Length: 75
Picture (cartoon, rainbow, N blue to C red):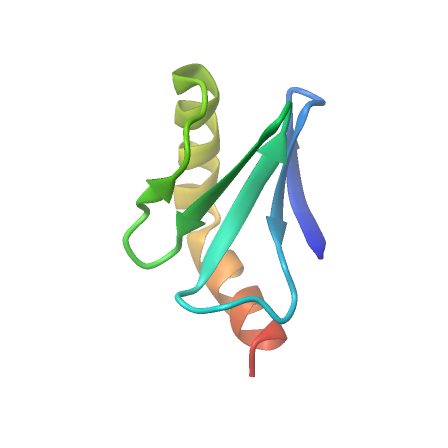
């Protein structure tokens, strides 16, 4: 698994090798693991709204990089 970014020293945004489609990232920490679809930007799981806003802004800003890395790990 590759940690792409850490938020608030509690949460890690990860791309997991050999994971399933659709392309997505995981945000884990403090007892939760949220999956965020890179195609739709929809998420599964419950997470704090303040963290969600921060993470989603970062994902939007780095979207192309995340999709490119997903493709490298999931050929």
